[in-house]
Length: 128
Image 1 (cartoon, rainbow, N blue to C red):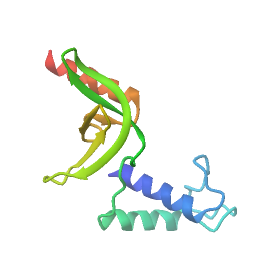
Image 2 (cartoon, rainbow, N blue to C red):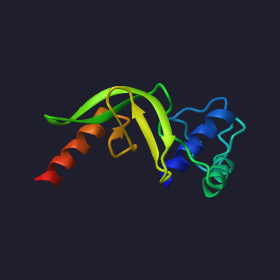
Image 3 (cartoon, rainbow, N blue to C red):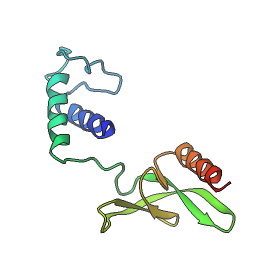
Image 4 (tube, one colour):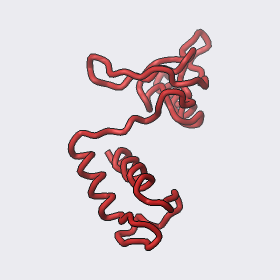
């Protein structure tokens, strides 16, 4: 999954490069001269970690998330705080959003309100 690789590259770059920022042009395979990080090496490390089963969770405890709460009025998008995460028997990551819902990231728990609203729209179309 490219998102895991991208997140690993970002996390590694933040740790090894003193001047790293999201707007940094270090993603080209050369040394930017501002730090001792090199994208080629960072990418190789990220690829190795990804190939060997290292994963990056989509959020952390205490993060704000948006969940789809099912109620009499239908599916409602609500904001809450991630308070628990665990792997179910099927090894799927379950994320619990306080007073909202529990479920999978990208299915009924999201990082933005817009993503959650789009999922509700798609659910409504499927029900028609």
